[in-house]
Length: 50
View 1 (cartoon, rainbow, N blue to C red):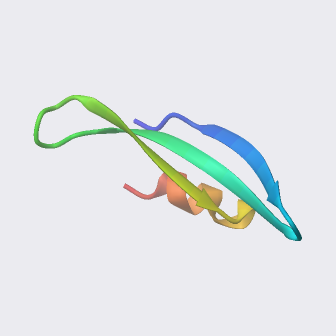
View 2 (cartoon, rainbow, N blue to C red; view 1 turned 135 degrees about the horizontal axis):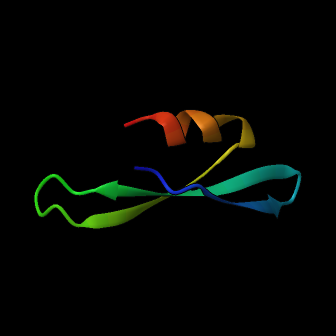
């Protein structure tokens, strides 16, 4: 189960995106959030990756 929350960030000449996805922990079964800052083109790959 992934929660798609995307915010646009701009630093200088680079354009970056912060993606947050909700992942179920295999150890405890609780949901945790993973955050990553990347290029906008890589967001869909990151969110679809398990």
